[in-house]
Image (cartoon, rainbow, N blue to C red; front, side, top):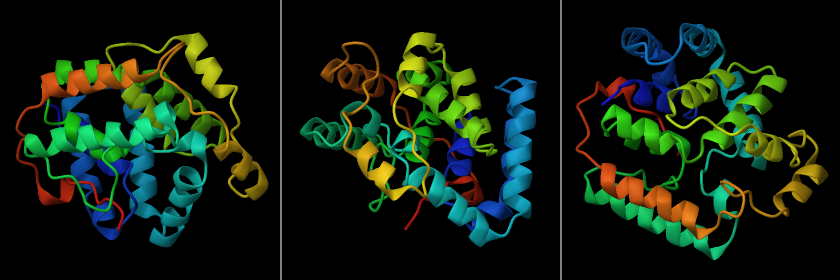
Length: 239
């Protein structure tokens, strides 16, 4: 069970004073476990420093512009699988039930497919199983990393780390297909409206319910009790 998943979960949560105060602990976990390459750890260190030293309100505004306004950077996994279809609702019900069955208390005001919550779940699995499960959305994570790189934001490092941790490396053609989809400026409201009306992204060519079924099968097979963690290491999910 790797605490690095907990640390990455915290870094993708809505910025708060608690998160800023926990930066030292997060840095220690990432460096001590050293599960991601040194170059990516240096990128993560830059993000850690940025969060620790920046004005909290500026951090929160940046977070909202990046992850809440733009569909292509949505932090909800099933948004990229099912969009607004009815299948998404059932997938989330199933995922939430599995979290609760194994003692992971999901946050009531956050959807179960929220990436920080999913990473907290992965932290309860044996490392090999967690890395295998990351293979399902690996090309989506890679596309998000590239979009964040173009925006010159240090949040890119978290997605580079997740791709590096995945046991299945994303296929170039699948990443390219995602990058070809609309990725509007968060200040362009008309373009944002148009993007949200597009067809939902799937996990791969011809993927449908089978992608969700595969993910859910991995979840059922990999659930384990969560390890103890300091309170400051828990992601501060949004209210």
